[in-house]
Length: 321
Image 1 (cartoon, rainbow, N blue to C red):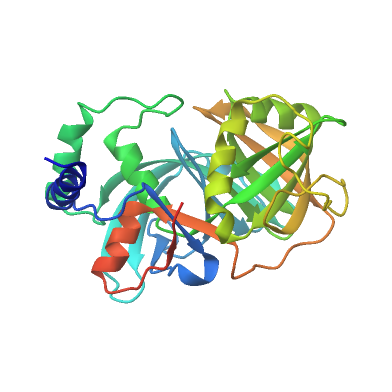
Image 2: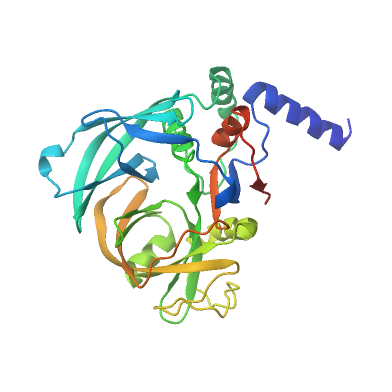
């Protein structure tokens, strides 16, 4: 059998057995081109919608942003969330969680919730079952974290919201590192919560230097930005080796990566201790101005959501990489 014929057979089997038609696990696109068709709603306690931040997947972590003064009375409270189709109001998934701590940040508070996914309906049950069986025979990729089914279902649900990928630049004063981030969110106008894997050098570099410039990047740079992921494990290097440009961030004067759109800069004000599994959470405070959202900036979602979008009749203008 010719190689081209073999590829067609594999493609057909992936579609039949796993329901997969898209080639990559994560689908990249322009912010303006990726539809947000699902929302996550908290259904226990106050039955209201809050701003939710996706902060980790091993263990699964959400942050609930709310107004007012934090209180210890909500410590260890139980939470349930539904992921809902905004058009049909049908349920796409369920998530349960328990409060671990609440942190006051200005006029808002952040409650960190450790979660587990009860169910996700983005994929057919038969495809989920087939994938669980096949996963027993897959080789583990170096650097990847093994996830249980419930952890991976949680990840798929959280990556059903288009997540902005930024290029983060840090420096030891002479040399630099640049790497992609997407596990972050904002608490009010002043604070960012950033989650990094504590085993990686990028995490220790930020902890030691305390300053970071984050750049929104053009979606056309998707391939290049994904390739920066390996830098999480690298030491500081000269800017020229990292192919950083002559453009500088306003406050720290850190060099911008190729395709940079706008910079937002922050200083570390607190490291949340202890770590949550593989994740170390940093509270960052804004230094300088806030950048406005750009329709051309790079975002991505999990393939499970992208496939679900196509089945619902949405168009999908993805950026190949």
